Length: 305
Image 1 (cartoon, one colour):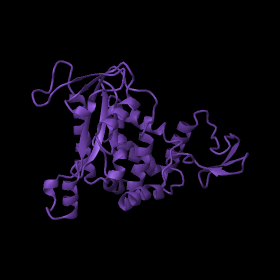
Image 2 (image 1 turned 90 degrees about the vertical axis):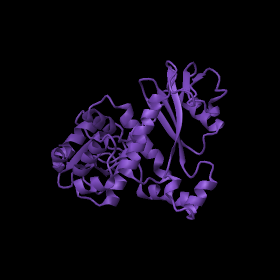
Image 3 (image 1 turned 60 degrees about the horizontal axis):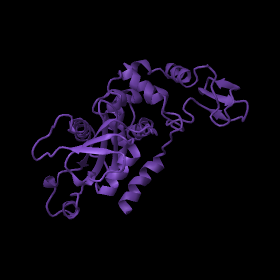
Image 4 (image 1 turned 45 degrees about the horizontal axis):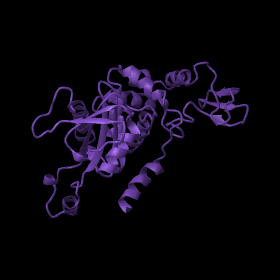
């Protein structure tokens, strides 16, 4: 439906213009001047203050993109509405762009999904960690990857730490390890003092920061003791791994945090309609920027490192 509705470039422009500037006065992102003139042949504005030209995409995740709004808006709608994510191949086929272009578009949209907030989780909170990566049993036993995985204490997998406020939001972050200082740092950054933490028996949760109490369940004997369990966090891990294995198939660890943020966004807005999630992402597109060079540099740095 979104592909058809926003398929007209003028309609897509009109929609985003009204969304970004509800007062009907397009504002120059450089000097904030509202005295502008519209150049209809190019669908851009010229600022009468600084004399610069700008478009509805300026100052957003879409800035400097040659891809039209008739493709950008449907892409945002699809990644917000698909429960298990949507692959760059599918986006490419549906919108008529290359897989490489679709992959870059999706990463830029994920930048807007990462809603940074200083508000911490509080009350009853579940804490857990998981490992993301291919099964060592599926690797050739003499391959370099298999040998490295077996020599690695984490068996070549990437660790993700998670926190879930009961009946509320989830926070998840890729971490270099699940040692005590990493786990405690994640908790301190995201949990309000006075909260109660529910975990499993893993000893990295021992001696928590002051003001945070802990109750745990030993998974060797049971998974639930009254209100003490981590089933909500396990549910999120299940959704995340279903998305990674079923839709994205192969995710480079250097980009994993972006995929975790994507799934966290959908989980935290699970009660919303597709249209509400779409509007939520659109409200975050301004002030975010990710260039292709920055995206690729992450991979190069990781490989050289």
